[in-house]
Amino acid sequence: MDVWLITDEGLAEQEPDRLPALLSGGHGVIWVDIPSCDERAMGVLKEVFGFHPQAVRDSAERNRVPKVHVYRDHAFVVLHAPELGAAGHVHYVELDQFIGPNYLVTVHGPLNPAVDPRAAQRETHEVLRRVRAGRLLPVSGWELSYAVVAALARHLEGFIEHQTEAVWQLEQRVTSGHLGNPEQFLDEMFRTRHGLIAVRTMGALGREIYGRLATIHRAVPPEATPLLDDIVDQFARVHGVADSQKEYLQGVIEFYRTRSDTKMTVAAERLAVIAVVTLPITALSSVLGMNLIVNQHSDFSLLGATLIVMLVMSALLLTWAKRQGWW
Image (cartoon, rainbow, N blue to C red; front, side, top):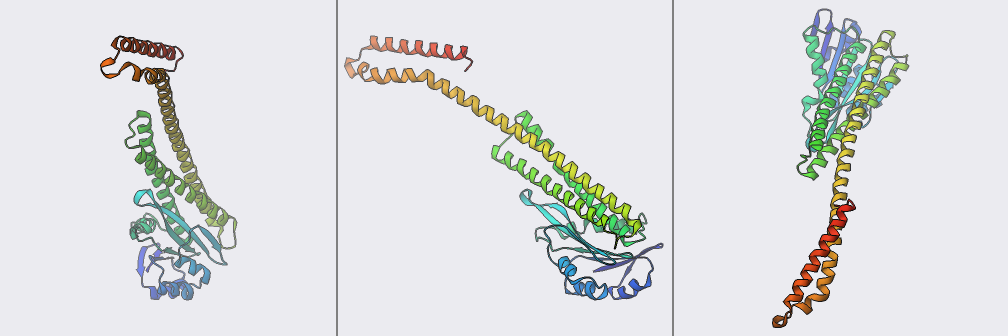
């Protein structure tokens, strides 16, 4: 558990034991960052901050969907950020926030063992660097929370940028015809689509959460309303861009399917023409074959005439197929 006090003079690290005095002192903004919500951290959330037991349990457990609970003097918010895993799987990295007038508590939810713990603290560390450098000096917990969530929205946009690069590469391969292994190509297309759908969902749910938070005024000070509206706009932009790229990729998938279906149709038509051309030959050879070639009694003149008839029939059928546009 890391505790910082942000004042006009900058950032100062504090001991967790000083939290009660800091909360009652009213000097600056208190930021508590909890990498993993263990028993000690839960005790601080319950006893020092007095948070609702259900909210504390939610911060210690994995939440599969974002949520917001507004209390008398603070709000509890659950959000997710994407992290690309093996084989195109998108991990949902949870970030929980307790937002008060002069404090912010950030809790990083339980992580899949396959996810690097540094990924969970990406946004908070980014904001921490800005505060340490003096480029950000928030005057309230809401302003600090805005900086963290804005960093998360930028990460969502960066994730979309990464997926868009994959979409462009897939489109180039489809239009140029250099697909490589078709099964692997299809797998890449649907993995990219999965990533875009995941980040689109995160943007849509984040927009809904902060849209609802902006309409509940009992715990949100008036000066925080413009910040919440801007967060709603950022999540809406993430949702819109991800949705547009998903539709673009869907167009690439449809182009690939149409091209593949066309190739299959052409191949089937050619096979049908081949069958039409060879069927009379097959029938003729089946009827006469055993009568023309009979060891020493074979009638080679009749055999030659039969072969000529076969060739003429094939030529006539092939010419007719070409005139019909089948070949």
